[in-house]
Amino acid sequence: MRILVVGGAGYVGSHCLQKLLATHHDAWAYDNLSQGHREAVPEGRLIIGDLLDTDLLIKTMKTHGIDVVLHFAAKALVGESVVRPDMYYKTNVTGTLSLLDAMVAADVKKIVFSSTCAVFGSVPPPITENLPKNPINPYGFTKLVIERALADYAAAFELEAAALRYFNACGASADGSIGEDHDPESHLIPIVLQVALGQRPHVQIFGTDYPTPDGTCIRDYVHVEDLADAHLRVINHLKAGQLVDYNLGTGVGVSVREVIETARRVTGKPIAVVESPRRSGDPAVLMGDASKALRELGWSAKFKAIELVIESAWAWHQANPSGFRK
Ligand code: UFG
Image (cartoon, rainbow, N blue to C red):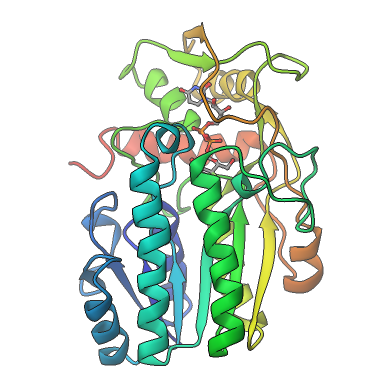
């Protein structure tokens, strides 16, 4: 298949692009490089363009004879979305509507959308697809708006759409060629590993008074290669005129303190912590139930143990202490 990976120079997008090329699909990254990395995309596979440039998207889809769009491009930081909702509505909502309009104009029917468990807000775990969706931060709300737009566009324009709701994406490619590199970094695992590398003095624990066994937030850390695998599978399970949805998690909840403790064991470094106030927009517990993905796609996370995830991330961070900047 001929696949356009929108946001394909970013973290999850680049791992998916790598898997598509390895499985002999013809795939290209379309990315404005605002957050993505040129180095994360193989030579000759990068088209530099913006999500809001509908005309360039149409031209790109027509020129490359695209069959499927995988849409990863988004602003995706919970905390940032609370203070800069404007950026989130512009990129995530207006940008995605531009992409959908381009698909309709170029007659591209299939789209897989990177959604998030943040669409659910605070619901009791484990989180299944049919639970109520009441996001508690602007990021989650922008993704929910697009899920609804996808269902409406699918019905009106015979699109075949999927929303894959990731829990906390983490880890790096097995061959060590690509991994997680955000600037500035705000995600827990890379920050913890930067402390292990001596690049930061400590990691802040945002909130120690949550209603969880150790008082810190619980998340479901799902490996980026498992996420890439789910994308490949769902392409063959799309349905005309419909939006299908899947929650992609491991079903295992890990607290902030447990992540830090595991990282101490994996790296052999002490990793200093500073207990800090809660970060705005964070739900106490997010943990997925991916039994629908198992039933319908035959998908389940191969990386279930947090040790494996942190080992994979640690290998990338040790080999690339400055990320993609050499
Ligand atoms: N945390 C800390 N200290 C840090 C960074 C994070 O204690 O320095 C905590 C957070 O408060 C949270 C947990 O670690 O409780 C995980 O935080 P991340 O920033 O790594 O990830 P988030 O859960 O905020 O968000 C990520 C993605 C979102 C996605 C979400 C799904 O950034 O796009 O996972 O849970 F929606």
